[in-house]
Length: 312
Ligand code: GLN
Image (tube, rainbow, N blue to C red):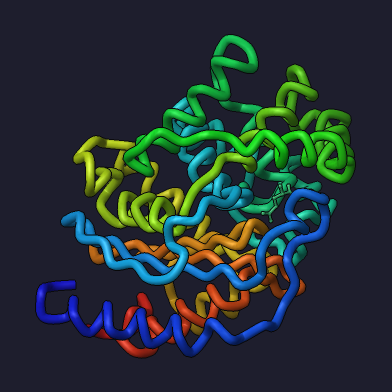
């Protein structure tokens, strides 16, 4: 984006916000009581450029839990801890075509299919290095803070809710333990996973995090390197193929940007070298993707020809 396109973008965001605000399709997440309390009217959009310009409309400063959008960032941390070869042997990079919480594994290679679905994300979190729970979690949190460019906190109520009701995730982890796909202290790994999902962010934070990915891992606000450039490519690749769960193929077809959604209502999308988008709207479609968030990204992509495969 250069200065000539900036003003049309802000005008466009305002216009999109007004037109999509009345859309009431979808439902807030109900798998844990805490998320069922989300206000369905909330809606925020933010775009951040690698030179640090921020365009935001609506409730872009409202905090919500990052949920599955944590997965690509923790994947980046695991890659930094162990290198590509080791991580690849533990967690694949193939889309499943299945729901985010599905209990399917790549039996042939004895690993979960990819780090963007729960099975792969839990196995990825299990690989995060550190002495015990506190230190391991602090490494995750610091990395997220590097991406967001500010201090972040955890929604303790969501964390407790995830932890006390996350039996399906617990079952996935125990199956992985049984198959030798992960090792170590399982309950500690699960607590870390539940806690990484419970980190609070805003649409603006998400846009800055996405812009950091668009900017080769350098946070456009703080100018700090949040992750190595090699990891950025790996992260964006799995986002492109697997980031929107069983909608990933259609998302790439229609919108054409690496992206990741979370059941808290957030979506991030990245156009490398150009910008990061963060959207927030808690109304989800049956696959767990934010309804308004998809519409926003689709319209932006079409209007400004952001699709990776548009010729520029
Ligand atoms: N905490 C959620 C879970 O593990 C995250 C899933 C999501 O955002 N899709 O079920």
